[in-house]
Image 1 (tube, helix red, strand yellow):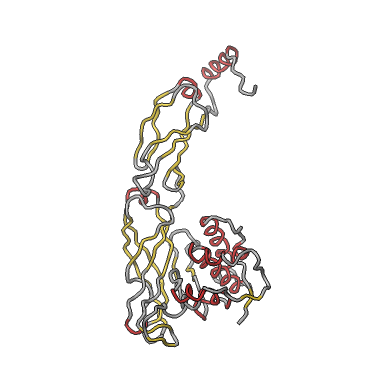
Image 2 (tube, one colour):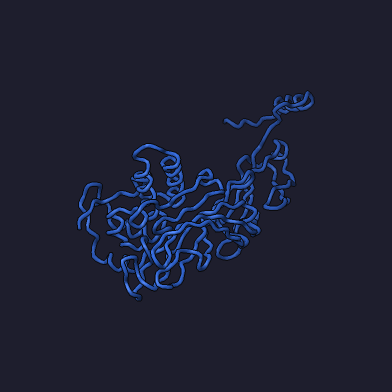
Length: 343
C-alpha cells in the first residue's frame, strides 16, 4: 500500500543536520505547546501525535539513520513505499523507546511543567501513522516482536515485553558525585490477556558517579508486560543534567566564569576558583586577558577514559561604585598609562 511521505524534520521545525540536543529541545517546546491537557484547540491532539511520532524516530540514532536513507528526493505528497531491505529492520524490532497503548510519564522534574505527559496517546500502537508503520512495522505497538514465539493478533506470544524510556532531571552534583533519586512514573500497559491497566510506581534510582547528560540507566524487567508469560521489557531512564548557576556542561567537560580585578589581570595573582563540591587554587600570569581559559585537569565529568576537565574562564570586572580613593588611583593610572586598547 502506498502512503504519503512524512518529513519528520519539518514536523519538529529543525534542519536535517540538527544535533540530538536541538531535536530534543524542539520536541519539548512543541510538546508543551500542543499537549491536549494544555491546548484545547481541535488540531492540538493530531499535532501532538505527529510531534511524538517524529521524535520517536529522530531521537534514536539508529532509526534516524534508517529514515535519513530515504534521501532528499522524497518530499511531502509523494507516494512512498519502503525501499528493499527494510523488512529486515522492521522484523528485527527497531524496538525500544516508549511504546504501545501509551507510556504515561508524570514529570516532576521541570521537563513539561509538572504536567502528566502522554508520549503516545490513542490507538493503533500509540497513534503512529501508516508511513511510520511502513518503515518500522508494528514493533512499537502491542507486544515486542521476536523471531520465535506463536503470533497472535496482539503480537508475538511469549516474546519479551516492550522497553520503555523516560527522562529524569538530576542536579549536577549528583551527576558528578553520584546519588539517589526517587522517580515516579505512571504507566499504562497491557497484561497477558490484552487488558490495559494504569498504575503509578516509584523507583529508587542509584545514579553512578560521573554520569553524563543524555546517558541512560537500565532497570531490568521494569518495562512493558509480555504476552504468554514472556519476559517483561526494560525501563530506560535517560539522565538530563539540570542547568547550574555556576557551571556549564560541555559534554564531559565543565566551564565556569571567574571574576578577576583589573589589578589581578595586569599584575597576575593566585586566585581561588570553584570546582564541583569545593574550590581550587590557580595562578594567573601577568597580562591575563578577559576570556582567557585555564584548564583544571580531571575536574569534569566522566568520559571513556578518566574524567573531563574544568575550564575556568577569566572575566575582568570593575567596581560599579568606586570609592574616592579608588577613583583617585584610577585617575592617576589614566594620566600615566600609555596603554591604548583600541589602537
